[in-house]
Image (cartoon, rainbow, N blue to C red; front, side, top):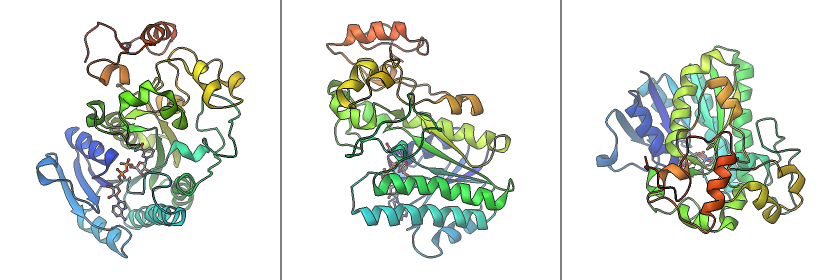
Length: 332
Ligand SMILES: NC(=O)c1ccc[n+]([C@@H]2O[C@H](COP(=O)([O-])OP(=O)(O)OC[C@H]3O[C@@H](n4cnc5c(N)ncnc54)[C@H](O)[C@@H]3O)[C@@H](O)[C@H]2O)c1
């Protein structure tokens, strides 16, 4: 059991991280500008409201709470949701303020949230990677302030790792499009539409290359990462995604429609294969996501492509355990 300081703990992802880590037996200190309503704060968690950009706030809270680890999530989390210079300055300053304060306080494990958008997909000038699936070797090419701020957050942990050696362990992670438990039940996702709408209209999920991840799986990933950080090279970056794509048709069919020029690159993305590989997290940490839209949507998603989806599932070597959309098997 550890005491874990989570910034942005009241946010879409933060609430699940706070709840899951508390449930796993950790003491969680949630720090956010906005409070979680007291009755929703899980047992085992305490919260502090603070603006982490205010001078000295991160240092003060770390001194007062003396955690074993820091998970930094606080940020402006949606590209173009504020002026570009505000997103850039808020996110880069927050990352630096929290990571440097945690380093100065000698906190032994420090993790920061990055984003897959650091790769640069969706650029109006066009974007194609060297190959699919995308992984941590894919060259980042951010094209907006949000994506750049996330790449800089990664480089911030790497800078501190370079300066500290292995005295302090650092890592960054790139969660795919986060879906929180209430969003499976129909609450709007970060982009304003529901998961079912996103599945029904591939044009909604295409801008994120059909990626997604259950917020509780991200929390599980963070718990495993905290446990194993001492045993892996310092300053690593990980993609954290679901094992399948948020789509009812294979990406090999969808990509040519939504990503011009990607045909040959994506023709092997058959079955339910996602565009992003989670192989590094699996190989280095032994982590795997437990949830999929096929297991979490209740009732199961029905679509015109259900038969195609079921067929796709049968073709996919990675997903033997998942229940296809519309299947009559039990729903967990
Ligand atoms: N949600 C996603 O799909 C997604 C995908 C990739 C990366 N991320 C990253 O994960 C992290 C969490 O994302 P989220 O969706 O939970 O975002 P969110 O907007 O729901 O939560 C962010 C939280 O940070 C807090 N915050 C912002 N500025 C602060 C400050 N100065 N001081 C204290 N608190 C402050 C906000 O009040 C908010 O509760 C972010 O870093 C985001 O960039 C999220």
